[in-house]
Amino acid sequence: MDRGTPTTPAARSNGGNGRRTAPHNGRTSLAPHPDRLLPPETGQRAIARRLYDSVRDLPLISPHGHVDPRLLAEDQPFPDPASLLVTPDHYVTRLLHAHGVSLPELGLRDQDGTEPAAPREVWRAFCSHWHLFLGTASRQWLESELHEVLGVEVQPSAETADELFDELTARLGEPAYRPRALYESFNIAVLATTDDPADDLRHHRALAEDPTWSGRVVPTFRPDRYLDATGSGWVRSLDHLAAVSGIDTGDYAGLVRALETRREFFREHGATATDHSAPDARMAFLPEQEASRLFDAVRAGTADEQEAGLLSRQLLGEMARMSSEDGMVMALHTGSRRNHHPETLRRFGPDTGHDIPLQAEFTQALQPMLERFGTHPRFQTVLFTLDETVFSRELAPLAGFYPSVYLGAPWWFLDAPRAMQRFRDAVTETAGFHRNAGFIDDTRGFCSIPARHDTARRVDAAHLSGLVAEHVLSESDAAQVIRDLNERQPRIAFGL
Image (tube, rainbow, N blue to C red; front, side, top):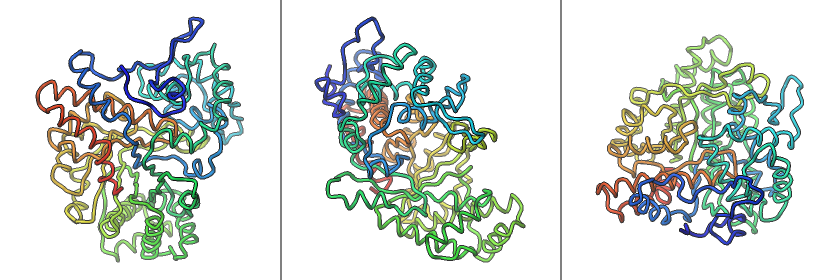
């Protein structure tokens, strides 16, 4: 059964159905099954197919992610498959590391002086351990990227590694596989990046001023390093912000003014949202005199850890207050123990695969913020968690009352088909479908964007088909819901 007409170069070269014939010489085909993630029961699967077909070719809205805007501004070819798919992807490197493959073998630079492996050697390590990804969400994304975006026909393996490396390196040099061409082939309607408040946004500006570019790429204000007063580099970060903003950040009021000024700069460049990563969702709303005293003590190095944590929560509360005034959506990602392994952090830096989820609590933590802004006409927040036990107990009831609260999609370790299904089961009966922000791919892997969105569309089609088969929803209602989840909800939730 045809599922529409994919627009990626690999799909077009195969006559538009996204599938290829089995490779020769007895090697295993990489082609994903066209009914993957759809229900096994025949009648329900037919409903799911129709629902999926109705949205599979809709434009992709990516309101939160980590793609570097330089990629599209400079539009340089990707150098090789290892640099594109392996080294920068901590979903890939962390699992291989767990099986004894060192991070330098995967291309990461070691501060102790161990040279990273060459891209071909990285690719060989990845291909020879391909079987280790069986059953993981990463395997599904990688299969889709390799086959449907990059045109690979055979499974990676030790035997096929060099052949695939040469094939893909040559293909990535073709015009159809440069970043801007892929952006268009992915049918992306809007792509939000994640940017430091001190960033000059030159790449966003270059895209906006380029008459040959018709895509929409918007920045997102990510001020974590300036809010986390517990960090060892906090004072240096404030000095950097002062140099960029032209506002003295030597006192509390100055830091607040500098952040407000930079938020306005981001809004002028198209930003609609801020993004925050914090250990938990607690915020403080202290009198300015007390906040100033705390700030002075932390900056002088005389405050204890508890006081530094309180100042961090106060600064996060200031972000909520600013959102109620300038209308920027406040996306809140909490519940991760960052950099769990100190030695890996020292040698390889952050975002190298050793962040681990924590237990979360929202009801009490958010009450002070929601008391102030939960019904404010200009305030809006999108809540993400790594603790699925709070889906039905806390997040759905909060979103089911407060007009300012939207539920973020299952994120990071929960960004997987079974977890997505559990999320729908947990929140829908309390909050419905329309207190949800739709799908957020949250990826650094540019070529994984269509794969991740396709997975979410398949999972939602499967979930909704069950409700239709049980006569909870009509099929026409289900078709409208799945369209809303892909078109309406991300635009509303993120102010797009």
